[in-house]
Image 1 (cartoon, protein in one colour):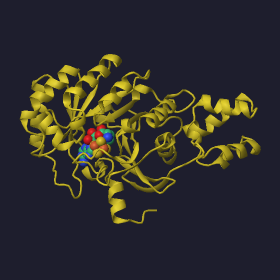
Image 2 (tube, rainbow, N blue to C red):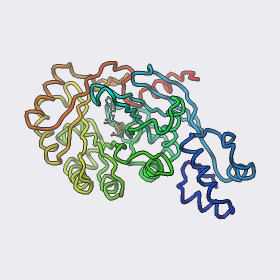
Image 3 (cartoon, rainbow, N blue to C red):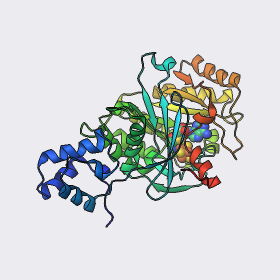
Image 4 (cartoon, rainbow, N blue to C red):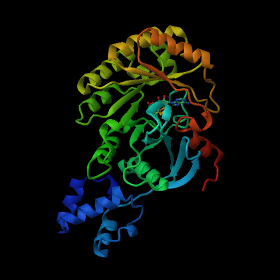
Length: 359
Ligand code: SAH
Ligand code: SF4
């Protein structure tokens, strides 16, 4: 049997194991401190645990830690982290510093975007993450470790990442059990101590799993990648729309909204000549108003080898204005520096395809 990773275990699971070993309860607290507050990368760091206990732990569990393969971006802008996992797989996390214009000058907000799978099976036509298909799910610890490893490289004290978006490579709700375990651990007072309201899960629209997430006790935020406001336009971009057409997706979103009483975000990438026509604005407005959702317009980040392009700024502004005329709460991402801001999945794709020697 393969050993579980220690960071995929809940406090309760560790407590039960320690009871079997007849270890005193305070050892559980010490261990959790090493795992989450001190972000230990190796067993050897856990200096206040007796050698005999450390020995037992190494026999029973793994303690994986991602290796930083590449880092891109300056300290005050968006930074990308490319991680190499134990089996050599590459995944990305993106750190987005507070934007004073959005959150106020005194904001101390650090947002991290994490991956949930290696590759993606959903094959959205515009996305780099799915271009080479799906390789595997990430374990709960591999999701959690992205937060801890970024904090460790940034030398943050206490909980430094205070906003988490599950929008990196992969479809989070297709890896439901590992995702939820990771989020519960990140949310727990004994673990990551991160508020559920500070965690946003983005999905391409897996309707049954949206309902399942709605039934969870935690108040995670939900973002839905829409990218088309009619079945025809959406299906051109997202194969999943055939399985869960807009009507079914909207019903699942309404269920989420009702259960949680929180505002959902509809993400809408603007792609020139594909979904930026003003004919999409009224159906999009209708959907958003019906769900009391806000719309986040994102100018497309071009992906090498794909034909899609970002619309010119006037077209982006016109689309935003059309939504606002319908009284929809909408924002348009206007920041520059598209190369680094490029969506998750692109850095990995480039690295894998070039067979680049990243160290
Ligand atoms: N699989 C999930 C989460 C990962 S993708 C989902 O699809 O929602 C996170 C977001 O990035 C999605 O809204 C996705 O559509 C968007 N995205 C993917 N490629 C992009 C690109 N090249 N430019 C802009 N946004 C992109
Ligand atoms: Fe997968 Fe999301 Fe990319 Fe679609 S947009 S291929 S679901 S990661």
